[in-house]
Image 1 (spheres, helix red, strand yellow):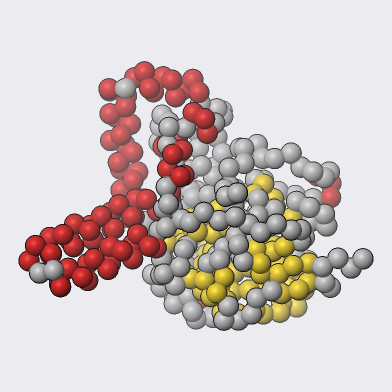
Image 2 (tube, helix red, strand yellow):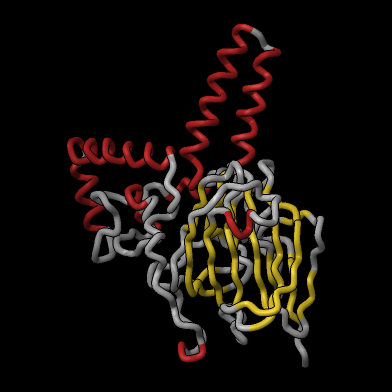
Length: 330
């Protein structure tokens, strides 16, 4: 069935003693929201939030009081007042207040066929393109083809298809849709603690841009770095572009370590990552997205028994395609 990153704020109970697991790192102080790069749409949504909260306090006091009684957590992680789950949209990776899904009046948005974290862009840009198409069509139907195609591209880009991960143990799933553009051997990776294999995936503007977890894992740490916005097809983009790096440790023994990088591209200026250190996440579950063409990298340990299942040039799907598998040495 479809997987999503919906673990509790306290995380799942560990299946092995913490003594054999990597210590959880403090969240990078640069990660102050799920979209640390900000952006016009984020600023517009935060401005709308101020208007919305004023309306709720003036005209829906009963709703505000009920949400307060249902609220859990002991501090406000946001730079603004929190009245209901909608106010936590950009700050739900910061801990603090939260609501059970049963009491979240906005949970229905998870069932939409579009990325929930891209709905504002979809409405703003896609809606504008639709209106432009209709207006231009009043003058010339052939001329309306251009804005019409643009509108279709926005709706296509922000789609969020349901995915069912394949069954099996020791599988490593694709963290992104796109084309495999590189598979490189790394002599030594500090987090993995030994030799590794790096798989680079290019996401065009026609790919789904939801990122998904490659394994059942615990998020050990995250690092955000501002940078350039080079074309994601260029190898140097992996070193110089804006990025979010997730360090993961498999929940099952022998607790292999993995790294996933979300890398911005020439058009993709906004990286979204909704998780935080200490959370458990299931293989194939969503953990974020990159808005418009971009790159995702997966680093996995180069152990004996590692079998790569993809080649450069292959087209893969997040949470579905098996990138690699670890074979037992027994």
